[in-house]
Length: 52
Image (cartoon, rainbow, N blue to C red; front, side, top):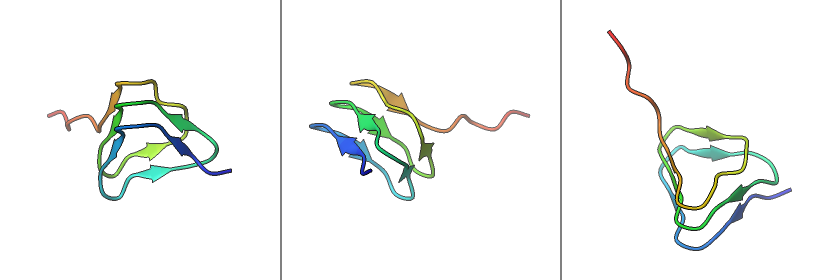
């Protein structure tokens, strides 16, 4: 039921990782992100900038 974080993963403040998912090696999860699916190795998950 706990997430699996592989080597060299960076998780910034207020990120929420829910369930039995895997964060791949070298991935980065930005702040204030909700992760509900597996993240591939080397991926960078961040919020998009607001558009005008």
